[in-house]
Length: 113
Length: 112
Image 1 (cartoon, rainbow over the protein chains, first blue to last red):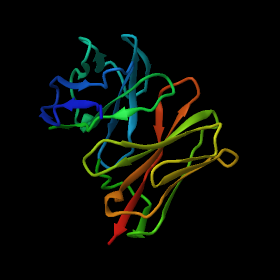
Image 2: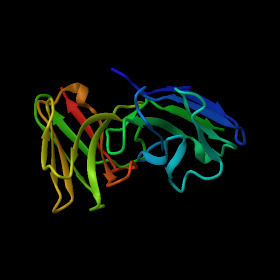
Image 3: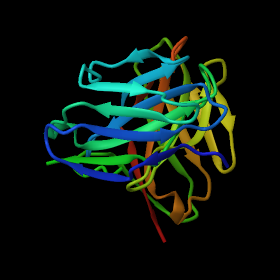
């Protein structure tokens, strides 16, 4: 069964450092997303991406965040200068189209120290 | 995936019994609803979905019911098994959008 894959599974970084989280969405999917889940809280939407551009973003997704699809298979989330409050599980997700089921990866656990 | 610190409603159910998990949604413009299962340390796993033009949909051992009048969604799990122990989230998508809004979740504990 096709799945969304994410790397790394866990990353520890110092405050102020840049972090790149990587994702390989399901191959025939056209919409890509990043969500995050702070420990003990709900899953929150960060950003959606379609046709090589951001289609929607939340207020969490400020100038410190960026997304990129550098090639035909990868989708990345970059946090330019990490803060302690960026510590969370970051989930990549993808869907075939608008209104289709959104499938999640296993997550990348980011710890900022 | 851990929900430590979040005061989740918890449903304890005996193995083999049926489970019913409820969810209230707030946006009457939502037209697509999904139930996800999240095990500890893992990502949300799709269980079943339903569109707003339906009021019931069945899958393997699971049934989702949608009551648009009172904006209520429920997930029924038949013959609950130990592997069903997890946190269950409902999520909604507004018409003409792709942003999932998750509910607060319910923890299901299956007792052997």
